Amino acid sequence: MISIRNVLVLGAGKVGGTVADMLADYHRIPVTLADRDPPRRAPDDPLVRRTVLDVEDTATLAAALAGHQLLINALPFQQAGRVAAAARALCAHYLDLTEDVAATRVIRGLADGADTVLMPQCGLAPGVIGMLGAHLAGRFDDLHDLHLRVGALSRHATNGLRYNFTWSIDGLINEYCHPCAAIVQGQPVSAQPLEGYETLVLDGDTYEAFNTSGGLGTLCETLAGRVRNLDYKTLRYPGHRDAMALLLRDLRLAERRDLLRQVLEHAVPHSREDVVIVFASASGLRGGRLEQETRMARIQGGRLRGVDRTAIELATAAGVVGVFELLRTGRLPARGFVGQEQAALEDFLATRVGSCYAALGEPGSGAASASPHRGAAFAHTWPPQPRRRARQQPQP
Image (cartoon, rainbow, N blue to C red; front, side, top):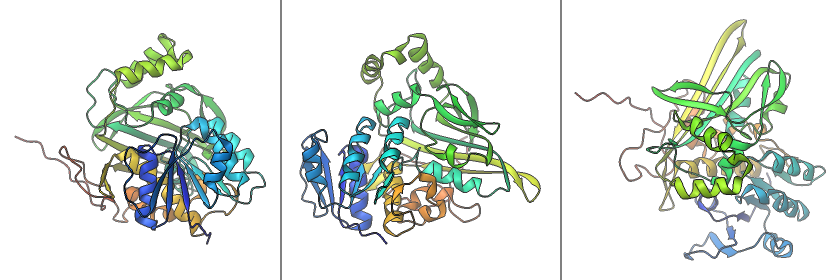
C-alpha cells in the first residue's frame, strides 16, 4: 500500500474536472484542482478545492504541490516535462494523459533513480489500450499479429470531415502529424501518420482506420521479440482520412500547425454527443492451433456528481483514476518509470471505475458494453451498468 492522502490535479478543463470528481466520488479523497484561469463558479465542495495556478512559475508550482503525495497532469502535452520535473523534485508520484512521444521520453529520463512513480500515458490511448494489448499478447503461445484500434467519435457527423471535436484540437493535430511506432515482421518501424488505411466493420457499423502517433505508448518496446506485427490506428467514419490528407499534405498545413489549428477551430464544431470505441484483435498459435481473439467496448456518456460527462471524458478519466487505485493498493511498482502495460487488465477492470471498460473482460465472463445511447439527454448515471447490447430491429 502507498499512502496517498491528497491529490493535485493540474488542468481544470473537461477531462481534468472529470478526473477530480471521479477521485472524489469513488475514493473520497481530498483533491486540489488547479488551473491558470479562475473557476467560473466556486461550488461549495468539501472534497474538490479549486485554485488558480500558473505552472510556468516554478516556485508557485512547487508551493502548490507541497502537501500532495500525487500529481495528475491533465494539461496540454507541452507542459508534461516541466510538471513531471517538479513532481520528481518534490518526491510526489506523477501520472499524466499525454500521447506525445517526446514528452514521454523526457519523463522516462526523469524517472531514472526516482523514489516515486512517474507514469505517463494513463488515459485511453495510450493507456487502457496498452493494458488490453499486453493482456491479449499473454494469451498466445506464439503471437503473430496484434492490432489495436480506438475511436473517439461524434455520434452525428454531418460535415465533410465526418468529424466533430470531442477532445483536444492540439492533441488531434499532434497525433496526425508525428511518426507512428509499429512492429512489422518482427522489426520496429516508424510509420507515417494517415497511412496504413483500412476499412472494417464492427458490430455492423463501418469505419475507417489509419496510423496515428502515440497510441501504443511503450508497448512496442515491451512486446519486442514477442510479436510479428503490432500496430495502432485511429477509428473514424469513412471519408475523414482523405479530407485530413487534403489539409495536411496537399495544402501543406502540417507545416503550418498554428494556421491549421485556426482553420479547424473556426470551421469544425465541438460536440458533446459522442461515443468511444475500443477494439483489439490478436492472432497466433495457442495449443498448436492458429486462433484469433477480439475484444470490443463501446463507451457512452453519463452523469458524474450531477454533471453530464461525455464518453471521452469518462473513458479518459477512468483510465488514470483506475491506475491511481492500482498504485495506491500496491498493484504497480512503487518507484521509477512505469509503462501503462505494466498494469494488468484484470486488475484494472476490478477497480472501482473498471466497469467503464467491462466489455473488455474475458469472453463469457458476462461483461458487455452499455447499451447504445438514445435521445438527447444522457441515458444513465455513471458508471453504466454492464448489460448486453440489444440489436435494433428494422422498422417496417
